Length: 379
Ligand code: MLT
Image (spheres, rainbow, N blue to C red):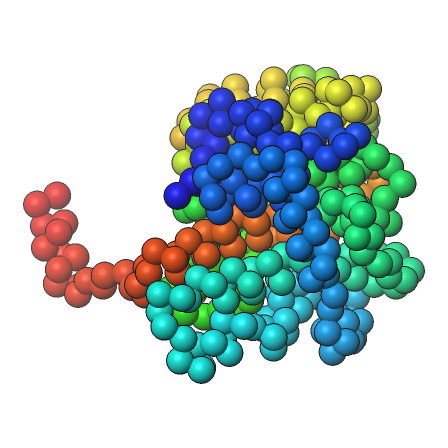
């Protein structure tokens, strides 16, 4: 099984370089990545196109799901709306039906694969519907069967005219898909799937984890923190010294500098670098990007001196907001939904493999108080 591991900085680059790109695009696609994650092989352009065609042919929403989303108050967080809609799509789960009909466990992977493709195909429609209801005019576009997944998603959101934005979506959807599977959303999807809950229920559970501020919600926190900093300092071009002082003020008030540190990485997140390279190519003069770059110079030193973080380097969330904002997607509360669409590609491919490999239900071991006492007796 191939897992998208980004713990070495070399890992993102080869993936980006080896996977095919659509005609006229400068980034590879989540469709190509999905093929790689399922087969362990780099797809040809024709194989990649077959995934695009398959997803386009499955891209429609049941009317009741559209109505459910339309009835949500705009004050309900987009992530809660997203999770609600994914749970509702469970209505058409082929795995749930097949399980009820007594499918042989050796064949579980097949309806899980079908559900995964159906779910992936529907996510841009769900996400863009939430976006356009909450932040725009409530009017919704249609899938263009000649376009790839990211171009369609960009168009549904309302940014389809800008080719650079479609490329940003391709990059964004590829790099946020997953890395090493241990994060809250990937592990939750895997864990819930181990109970043979179908892909809709499993992924919705993962989304609820992604919605936490220490996980996917961090990308909206990063931008909020930077914009607050600019406002408090009174300039959109803060100096290194001003940023250093602001970081210390944040840390001294018992808060964290969002977007820095990581549970397992001990160096700059390669996904941060991939986004930085995109910014250097497409928006080198953007003032906010310049601030993000200055933060990259200053924060690791501050965090090292502070001495409380194992990894002072930026993670994936430290960069995504500035890119989206540059193209006009300024609604920070929506950022984690974009993350969720991408994460689906990583966690659903893992779920298909989980069932193909016949993994059993997961259950952590529990300990009695007496056992814990004994464990620490000698210390
Ligand atoms: C992620 O991609 O989910 C984040 O980097 C968090 C993690 O891996 O723990």
